[in-house]
Length: 272
Image (cartoon, rainbow, N blue to C red; front, top):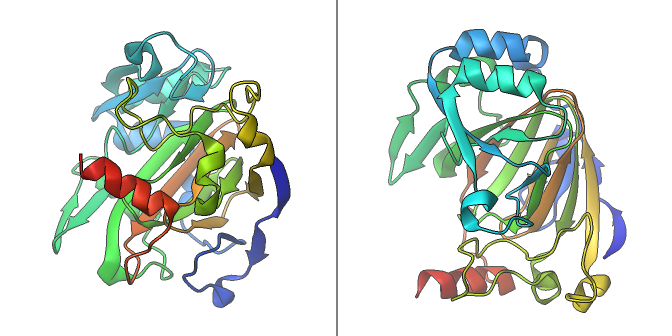
């Protein structure tokens, strides 16, 4: 992997939807920036049911595991239970994402607000940068230090505005034209995560995946109040550094369909 530069950092008044990632610095003035802590969220979300990811390695999914069940392992309880587990976690073992429970979804003009997580939008309202008429999904993410999300692309075909509320994250991003270098799990193979790379970017096995040595990547760092714009079909992986990391992700559909190598790969998956 060749890091060719840092993602450009801009102010909110310079943002425009494009095919290149940017970090929008200090764009947020949400109440969540000062309110959100493990204890506050445990009290706010309390007894609502929750399911969260678990991984002994800190990698989510844990593709080093021997079985699919271990790779995608989860635990369940209440949100109070989750935040207690998070407080005790010292190795990035637990992670909550919208895979398990969304905040908001909009499909065919119908908006669904989760009865438990919808209250998060009182502290973290939709940024004005997100086109309201094309909003698709809102997710929340909660983690401790050591969590690593595996290299993947968002298979919903949406742009993503990743809003850092508390803690810090580092990202590595690959343009869609790097598809052949990142060795996604093969269509028709045993692993169903067809939008994920087979490669652990933290420790790539270049003997198995030599093309990855030539892959060009951008990096980005996020702190509280920062937004990372990830254009549709870009591949990305995160490392969570803060003792308590919280994010809200806003996805929206591009104004027109995008044609690139990753979009065509997803179309082949959906055509099976």
